[in-house]
Image 1 (spheres, rainbow, N blue to C red):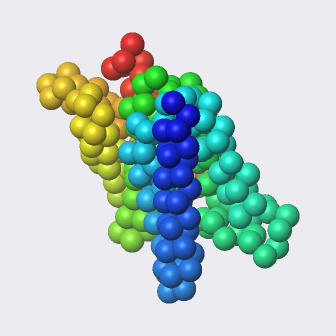
Image 2 (spheres, rainbow, N blue to C red):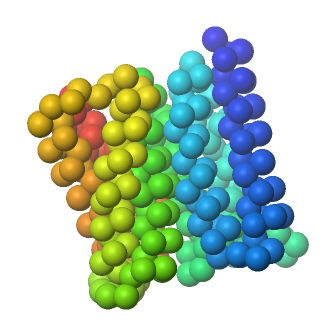
Length: 223
């Protein structure tokens, strides 16, 4: 049992280390802002490593948990000057810390339905991450709710990619039933997640989006 868990932990750590090397040592030299968005997005592929794990404690506390401290130490709030701000997105210094917290909490609560964890992670990574990239590049029409300025194009990208990634996750986990009811419910989850992303301020969408997407899926399609 624990052997599989250690394999899963190794896969997670190796993948994140390689991703950090690529984004922070190679990509960030020419594209510093884009590199951190790529890190945000590609970390979501952890969703496809989850089936290896056999115990919730190992996934939540030894795979996800340490990244809370690690991302904090590399955030703009870090007490260590040499690594301070290495993984911080502009305006959202604790974004990846929230990301790690969300994964750890979802991993512990929904361990027995891993597709729920995957949906939360993918809505946060691909959905929110691509919304930001596309919104910055193409979003000319803006709106502001609370403190953050968002774009309509970015919110539409959030909706679209959250829906697409939920389909991919359910296919991967063998949980997709192609019928009108399923597609309608997934569209509703993606739409609500996009609204939540649009109204959540100060980088807290890295907490609100995964929890909302995962809980809605669990309530509407698992229970």
